[in-house]
Structure formats: structure tokens, C-alpha cells
Image (cartoon, rainbow, N blue to C red; front, side, top):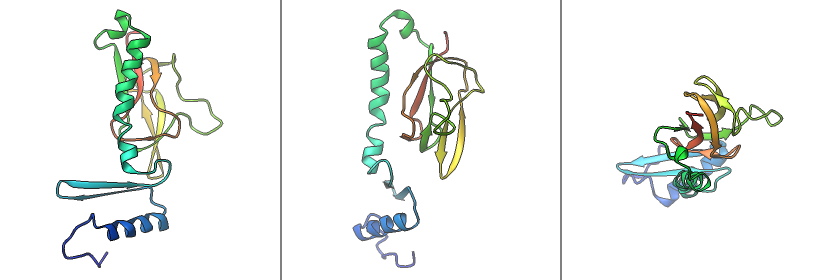
Length: 162
């Protein structure tokens, strides 16, 4: 990009338009720009814009435990250290099964151990198998198949005392 403006403002609307065109031309799904403490993330595909992709992340995290505590208000559900969350180690697309015809890697009620594959996260056309890294029973699957996930997004709730 040899035609950078001298001001160096990466958030200039013309530059953003050119980036969107480049993303379309080269079939890029995501671009992130940083300038000092400011950053902007452009995404294409299943989710329309970065604010849409980033805003839902806290909501399901907050909603899932609330729903679990409402659905199971008994003391064992609130026991400290009972539940462990498997989180996404990267930004990408969550896949619950190896291919569209296959059964899911795990479902609610399945027992897993530390080396059990629980899902795949596709990042930059690389399919990364995600291991449970703990033993227990799958209490909840917190995302849908083919959902875009952010780093740190909670994917599964594991009951380690079951």
C-alpha cells in the first residue's frame, strides 16, 4: 500500500472502503487494524459487522449461567469448582462435528476426559481439534454449529463432579 496518506490515519473512510474491496477481491473474512490504542475489526461472511460479532459474546456468557442457575437452583449446581468451561483458544468458526453427515463430537450427557476432542475451530482454513482438557460430563453446549467464535468464548460447560 504505497499510497498511504502522510497523516497515517488508518481509519480514513476511503482507506476502509479500499480495504473492504480488497477483502472481497481476495476472499478475506477478517481484517483488524490498530493505530495507537485504537483498533477496528472488519469481518465478512456469516456475521455482518464487528460490533455484531463482539456484542453477543458477553450476552451468552452471562445468559448461560443465569439459565443454568434458574433451571437447576439446587445446591449441587452452585457448588464452587464443580463446573469448568471449555473456551475457544482462537477466533474462528465452531464446528460440532467432523463433517455435515457425522455425529457431533460430544453432546449433553457425554462423558469426556482431558484428551477427548470436543469440537473443531476453523481459523484461516486450518481445522484445529479442541480437546476437553478436563474430565467430566458435558452439562451444556453453549454455541451452535458453524457459529463464529471469538478468543475466550465459552463453548462447553463441563460438570467435573458428575
